[in-house]
Length: 562
Image 1 (cartoon, rainbow, N blue to C red):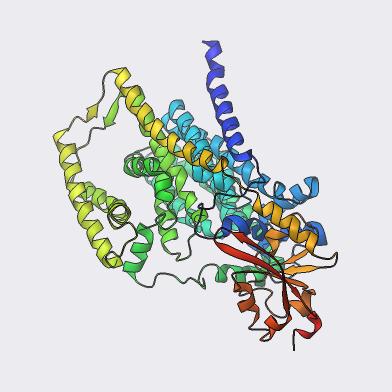
Image 2 (cartoon, rainbow, N blue to C red):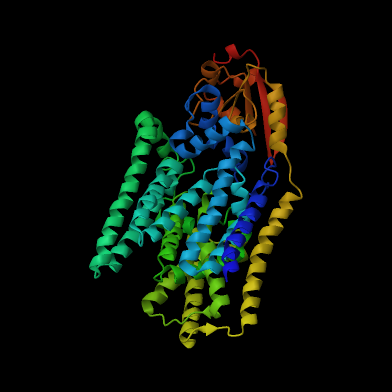
């Protein structure tokens, strides 16, 4: 048996190497053109790391009004370190996100292994390693992959901290750090941890020794939260409080896309997470099986799955609050779904359980029907409406509820009829069923990956080089795409948005050139410079995924402000 000790570590290492190959393959290539309906996969690498570039080139995190360090401090710090060590470029900006993606594979393996065994852990790690949305977004210099890693570590150390109290300090550090140091939208981890705390206290109420250990652990958890707060207060809030408040307000309460104004609009927004971005079709088997299995594992006595279930529910509720919701926000829902599928497959292989023993009462039946409501609504819109003119949001919710009630009654009836559950006894039968699901999941991921890989382009790298050669040595490029186009240049690129750096960028920063996509940046700056078009001379223009990027030279820029 000693030889078998190396089997699981060897398999995990192979899974991580596979994940590395998928994520690191030709990092200079453009993302898939259909990865998102937004342009974030092209622009947000430069926007998220804007402060890091400023620090390396100009010695200061903040050189103008656009200051992402205050909401992404850890990512900017790490990217700045990479820039200092390896230079500024398209590959370097992705390294932090890529490393976080690989770390998430290991963290999810450990998390699921603790909750459901080694086989489930390995399957979960492999599914995350191959997951097409996760692969593609961890190939980009975005913050969501770091957010996922921190959420996994916060839950992992919480569950382990129930047995080893000292680990609770790490749980608190990662939970608070996710919100304060990685991304503010991870605020949903707050109610997740409150749920975990309530269940832990309730479960230990009649066991004095366990209750005493839990109190020590909770104290250490809040010590970790306090440590993250101190770091954030000293590094971010104390020196940059005004900028921090401005960013939080701008990207939450004052979003230009607005927020749902009624309960019905909020429910529809929540139930259709992933619909606009086609996230559901990209991982349909994982989404379907994961959504159906997650409540069963999450409402069991397994602490790990309880955390994942709360993560999914509160993450979904948070996403429903956002009218502006590109796919990179939605990938935070992947780990709980993958974990549920992996645990279900492992259970099927190990003991043949396809449907566990269930005797649902009326309360559980009601809960199951409500749980099915979002899935029924989204499947109705995806399979039957298919983008055509369908019912109003209220009508879609009503039809989805009717479908959920019908399916819920049918599954409850089936569960009662099969009171002892349903198991597949022959071992070959178990392997065949599990193998079919594995084939469906992995084939969908790999077909998408190789479809992109065989047709990949390198437009952004080429465009960046062309624009860099176009600008004079003292040239300054302004516009919302400027940070992306200046990724491999040491020339100044000023991000101009509808709320940052749009007040006299010519006078303030010496802007000599403007990049505009479909004239959006021109229209934005015309509020400050009504005669701007008279001074613009187009010198470069290229297509990017259905839009047109044009660089204009400002002729006689000193005259523009009049």
